[in-house]
Image (cartoon, rainbow, N blue to C red; front, side, top):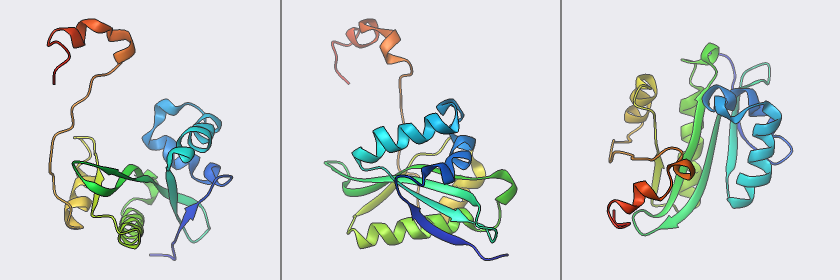
Amino acid sequence: MGAMTVRELFAGETMTAADVLLCLRETAGTAERLVARIDELQRPLGYRLVGSFDEAKNAVAAAGFRVGHNLAWGHFLYVDDLITLPEARGRGHATALLRWILDEAVRLRCGQVHLDSGTERHAAHRLYLGMGMHISSHHFRIDSLWAAGAEQTSTDGGRH
């Protein structure tokens, strides 16, 4: 395995990881749109980005995360995005990113680290379980809520 570097990417450096992130978030559109969304919308809300670079200094893996507080988890770090380019998988980049993130969570005194993962991402699940994470819940969602209108929420009087 060649030398790899993991470091945080700040505003103005987001394009460095755009192609990597687009492998996970294809619906984000172009690299320019993804960068604008991250730098203009997500970063002001606390989103941070970390990249893993190969020996040629190319970003081959990236992780986006944020820190927050809520009643369920207390002070937590949530991983929004974690992806490695297909050609760079199996070389330890995702592991290095997760180690960096766990170290940052400790540094920030977070009590928990969370992430969601698609049910079909079995290799990622093996990595997370191998790093001591456990499956703690199911994640439920409603897509296209703006188009669903009030009929979906009115059936139960707005109760969950």
